View 1 (tube, rainbow, N blue to C red):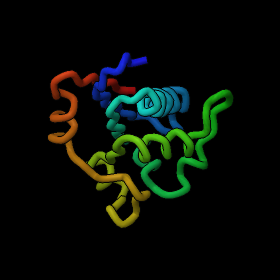
View 2 (cartoon, rainbow, N blue to C red):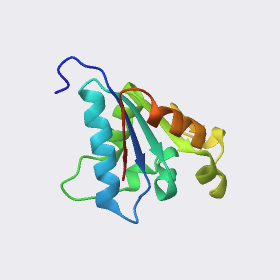
View 3 (cartoon, rainbow, N blue to C red):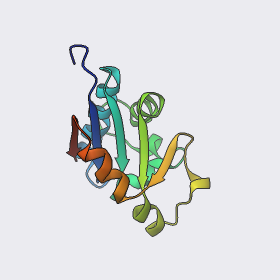
View 4 (cartoon, rainbow, N blue to C red):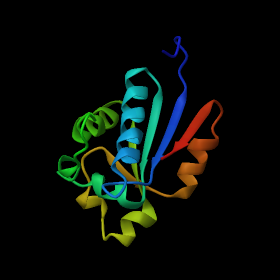
Length: 124
């Protein structure tokens, strides 16, 4: 556990159904960090961008992994979920398409969060 210390964790997931284990690891780590009391920002980039849309996480399956919709819901409820601006644009995804609680943001925000004092950034 975090011993009462609040830290920021920035998790960038670049994989989706194309690399299911890496994808599930990122969502699991982010949801676990939320449960542990960390300030979590989960960034959906590359193929994981599709999970910013309603019902797309429900299509993801990986044996012996927690259901992706539950992990995503936990992060939305207790942290922040951001969709990469360029990744959204390349896929034709707009703000109106997103799950409630997901925001589109760019590299400047990612860098700011990642370089904040006491922050830890992980990329999957």
